[in-house]
Image 1 (cartoon, helix red, strand yellow):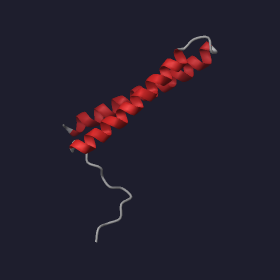
Image 2 (cartoon, helix red, strand yellow):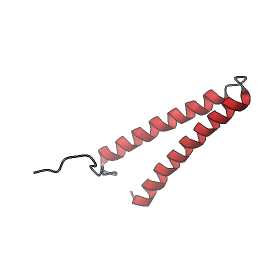
Image 3 (tube, helix red, strand yellow):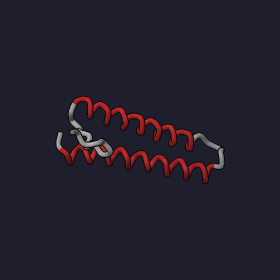
Image 4 (cartoon, one colour):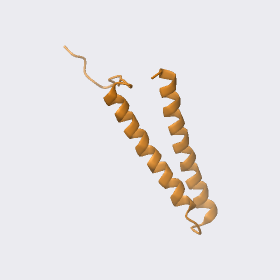
Length: 76
């Protein structure tokens, strides 16, 4: 997998997550509890977040993504 493709995929997921978070806020303010659009938007956000975490874990496990080791003590 190319580095730019991975960055675009992760960025796309993050953009969708933020979009659904904003939609949930908008529907919460506009609908005043009269519809389920807020719940649907926030359910999509949670689902996309879980899917992104699972894809990142799979990518690390398969070697497509290499963690950079921030916060680890140097060996030696």
